[in-house]
Amino acid sequence: MPTRTVELIKHPMRVRALEVRAIKRPGPLYQLLTLGGDDLADFESPSPTDHVGLVPASDAGLVLPDVVDDRLRWPAGERPPMREYTVRRFDPTANEIDVRVLLHGNGPVARWAAEAQVGDRVGVTGPRSSKIMPDGFANYLLVGDLTAVPAIARWLGVLPEGAAAQVLIAARSEDDVIELKCPQPIWVLWLTDLEIPEADHLPLALEQLKLHSDDTFAWAAGEAVAMKEVRRVLLEDHALPRENVKVTGYWRREQPDFDYDAPLEA
Image (cartoon, rainbow, N blue to C red):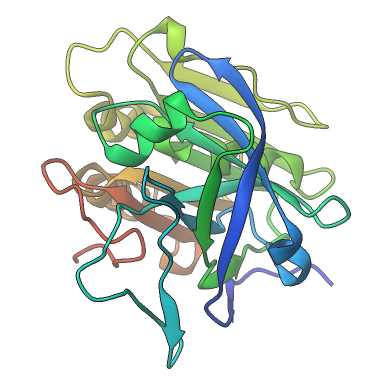
């Protein structure tokens, strides 16, 4: 039976040692890494928004935390860089996941991804939970900046049959635009050549957007401050019920250690 609410599924925290099996460059700003290994035998990823932590190996080797009381505990004095990324694809038969890394800024994990080679070792933590999105709406509105593109792409692959979809993505230029595949017709708008930071343009574009249906579920993710305004537009300007809106901050300007799972401030 179709559902109209978000279901939260908790997963036991796991730490897995994997290796890079394949590398592709779907666009100038993206590196698509296929990671695999026997440690994925009990991996679960039922939601388009599932994310995992990547812990690249250094010249000294792969340093991974222990799991104590369902929390990560790092060795004393050793805390390598770790960043969260969306699981773009999970193949349980091959024990593989795909992770699409946005090569922006100068972060240590993005630098590693840009230079990664097949056979490189990498640690993967999580996912800590899965948010099973509802499948009982007539229309789905998917909004985000470039960091949300992997989740949006996976969303489009699991849209309910017969549902409409509107996609709004803020990019930096035409070079950032990639093909988004969906088994049914969708409406997609890439916002490019912006004179203001790309994430800030999303609320302005949303204000002018006409929804395909009043029966709409909206999902949005991106820079945390911009997402607060996106949420306001969805709730106030479009008058969507709060339970029909799911907005997440993936990152925050000038805060590299922003918690991917942290709730947006009211």
